[in-house]
Figure 1: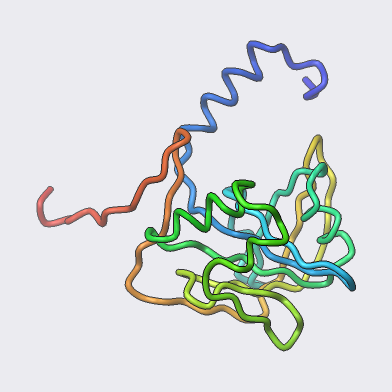
Figure 2 (figure 1 turned 180 degrees about the horizontal axis):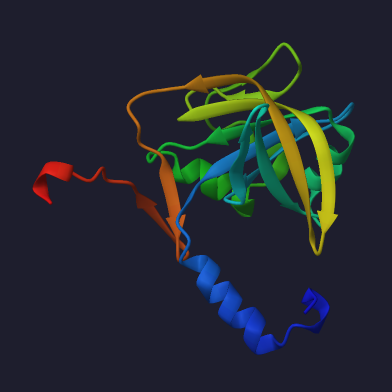
Length: 172
């Protein structure tokens, strides 16, 4: 069954199911010759260790999508639990031209803006862009990765921000 033929009931049930998937909150950043942009996303996942790569799914109706089609590189900035305000800003609460005024943003030597105090920065070279439905799947090969401790990623589940809590295996 194609997405075009999916019933409204199936779409609603599918949406409810996906809301139950906990996901790390990231701000994806990229730039073309004239513009830089960033957008909050949870549709980010690992793809391969050889080569080190990941997948980022971006709605085709967004400005970031247009920029990423032209750009050669992008950065996945995984937010920390204390960066909810940045997630909100890059989700549309703040106009695009004002977003980079919040937080500690830097620019890499390749021209990609990144959040200096994010939980993780994964700098990627775009390897492929595969359109599917309303989105494009961007495959990025990792070129550089910054990881910061302590491990406190911001999580999003069922339209709510959450935090991960390590399980004490000795208590089980």
